[in-house]
Image (cartoon, rainbow, N blue to C red; front, side, top):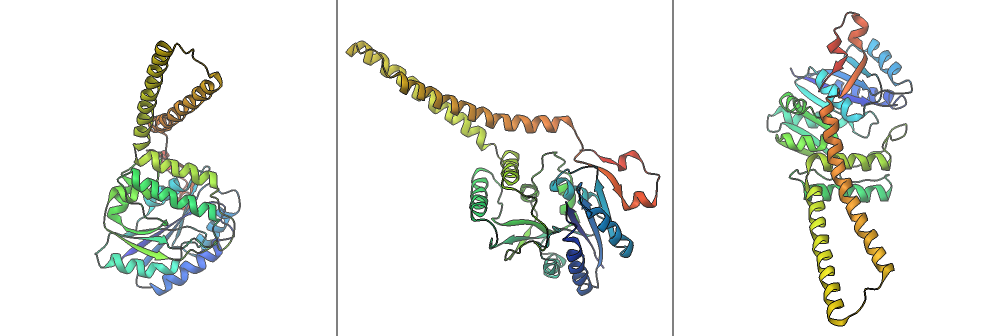
Length: 325
C-alpha cells in the first residue's frame, strides 16, 4: 500500500477550503486502498484560513499543517510541503479547486505502473481568463522555450503527482529564487502530461495580479536562461558599430563637402535613444546581480511559526522553526 501526500499551499483561502476538503475526501474514498496525508501550508494568510485548517485537523487525523510567520509566496509553500511530506508519492495542488481533485486516480494510475516518474497537468483552454492575460501567458511560454534549454509546456499547472525520488531531486535545488515550472524540467525524470479544460475558482479571488505574474515570469527567465545577457552584449556591439559608422560619415562629409555638422534636435533624439538602450541593458544585468545578491545572503526559504506537531509537543528544537537554504 502506497501513501500519497497532498501538499496544498493556502493564502487567504477561507472560502475555498470547505469545498476543497469535501472534494478530496470524495476522491480518497474512491482510492480507499491507498493511504493519504493532507499537508496544508498556510502562507501567512490574513483571514481565517489557519483556523479552518486547525478545525479540520481535529476532525481528520490525516491533516497536517504548516503555518509561516508571514507570506513567503507559493514557491516557498510548495517547498515546505515537500520537505514535510512522508508519502511514497507527492501531490501538489492549489486550494481554489482550479486543480480538479478528481484527476488524482488517473494520475496515480500512470505512476503506479512505474512507466512515469510524475504526472503533470496542463490547461488546454483559458476560458474565464482575461484575453490580455492569456495572450501574454502564451507569449511567455514561447519566449522561455526559445531562450532556454527547458521544455515548459504551455498551460502547465503546478498540479502534479511525483515520485519520492523526483521530490528529493527538487528539494536538492535549494535556491532562494525559485521557479518550479523550470525546476521540474531541469531535474528531468519521465513525465506524463494530462490535459484538462480550465476551471474557474470555486470561491474567493485570485492572488495573482498581472504585475505579480510579470515578475514571476522574469524569475523564470533570469533563473533558467542567460540569453538576456547575450542580447545586452549584442545590442552594445551593434550600437558601437553604428556609432563608429556615423563618426566616419560625419568626418568624411565635413572634409570633402566642407559641410558643417547640423541637426541638433535629431542628435538629441539619438543620444536619448542610445541612453535608453544602455539603461535597458544595465537593467538586464541588474536583474542577474540582484538574484545573485539574494542567493549569497543565505536567507531561509521560509520560516515556520506553527505546526500541528508544535501544538502537541511544546519542546521543539530551533532547527524546526527555520529551514535554511
